[in-house]
Image (cartoon, rainbow, N blue to C red; front, side):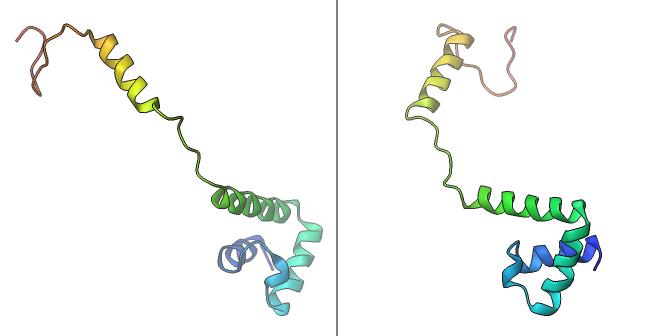
Length: 90
């Protein structure tokens, strides 16, 4: 088994080698024993799986409102609203 085949099997069968069919698992374990690149591929797949399984990160309540308020303040509360394509001198 080479790295390309190993990576394809990780994509198809997942990063848990114990769930792989015996005829694929044994060559994969042999490759892992001699290849740091194979070990890195498997670790990368494990990290990715954990990241995808993690709960989503939520923004603090009211963050969008605070951002909009700060943007309005930077733009200037007294400025007249402009239509699309209109410039300050128009």
